[in-house]
Length: 396
Image (tube, rainbow, N blue to C red; front, side, top):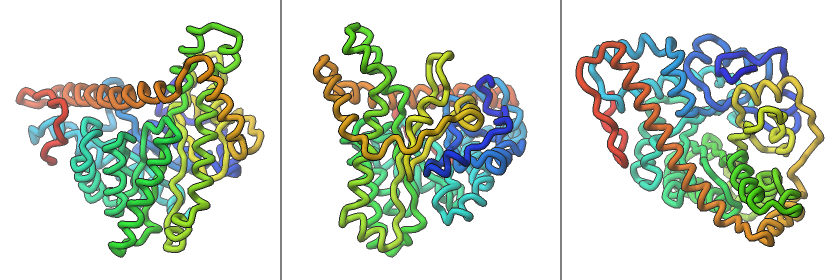
C-alpha cells in the first residue's frame, strides 16, 4: 500500500497486538480520515485505539488533497483572518472530530485508550509559560476528555508538562531519546499529578504518554557504525533503538513500583505509558513492521503511519513480550557502542536538537501550505510570515 493517509487497512486486525498489551495508534490523522468515516472504520474493523497528529503530513494534505478543509478555509478567507488564527481554527476542529471518533474506545476502556494528541507551536519548546498557556487554551477550545497536547521533551518543555498536568491537561511528551530524559519525563508527570491532587483534581481524568522515535535513533547510530566499518560495528547495527526502548521500559517498571507512584495510584492516577513513534524503515525492502514486532510489552503504545499500520494489521508475526527482563542485554549494546567510540549521550544531544528543529521546520511548512490555500480561497490581504520564536497570536 502506498503511503496515503486516506487508504484503508484491508482485511487487517490489530487486536492480537492489543492482546499483548500494546495500543495501536495512527500517526498522522487529518480531517478527511474523520469526515470520510475511515477513522471510525479502522477503529471498528482493526481495533485501532488512538491517534496523533503530524504537522508535516497535514501540510502535505493541505497542498495535495485538502478538499475536506475547503469549506472552512473559504469561511476563514472571507473573514480575512491571519494564518495563525486559521491554523488554530483548523486544529481545533480536527481535534474535536478525531476525539469524537475515538470517544467510544475512551468510554469502553474507562479512559485508558481512545486518546488523540496534537502538536502545539514547537517554536515555544523552550518557553514553558507560553507552552502551558497554549495547552490550556487548546484544551478549553476543544473541550474533549480524550485529548492530549504534544510537548517536546526539552528541559523547559518538561516544566510545561508538570504545569499542564497540574492543571488537569493530559500530555504527550515527544522526542524522548534517552533513559535519563525519560526518567525526567516521569518525574514531571508525577510532579504534576501531586500538584493536581493538592488542588483537588480527579487524577483518573489525566493521561500521559512519553514517546521514543525509534527510527531516528537507529539511523543516527547506524550511520556512525557504518563509518567505523568493523565487524564489531556491523554486529551492532539496527540494535540501538531496541536497546534504549528496553532500558526505558525497565525504568517504567521501577517507577511503577515506587512508593511515590503507589500513593498517586491510590488516588486514581493512571500510569504514563511509553509510546513508540517514527517506526517506518528507510529501506523499502525491509519489513515495515519490524519495529512493531520488536517493541511489544504490556502497557505500551505504538503509533504507526498508514503503511506500517497496514502491514501490522495484515502480517504481523508476534513472538510475545520483547522488552521485559531484557535490560542487561540492552545495556551491553550501549556499552558496545561506547567501546567503539560512540557515546550515546552525544547521539542524544544531536537527536534532541534535530527533533525540535525538524518540528519547527514542519510547522513553518504547514504555515506556508495554509497561507497558499487561504490565498487560493480568496484572501484579500498579504499574509505575513510567522515570526520565528513568536507565540501563536490571537485566535479567531
